[in-house]
Image (tube, rainbow, N blue to C red):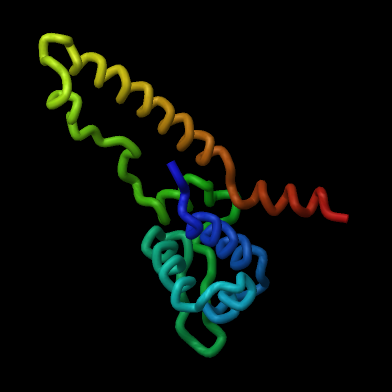
Length: 143
């Protein structure tokens, strides 16, 4: 499994918005992160759709958080960017490879159960980490 760069960028976008005194405009964020404004807009759109940020259109507008930093978990961000679909959806190709008398379905079920358990553990860990913890850690460990 490989997480897209947009997940990392989403975390950074939310940290910048959450630690800023007021709304941040798209072009300000893209300059701070040194990414294209058009790509940043795609990521921020996913964060808006997920309800993590709001865009206020005005001269003094920009992006603001919809929740407190402590209430935004890495799982929230992951699901906003990667979606909520299961990691593994079997195509039952083993049925075409092995003799059905070999009880392959049971073996496939065992494999899928293990992978589902791994996915659940991964998502549980992401749920335990929130943006507030990250900012607190940075401030405690700064020189």
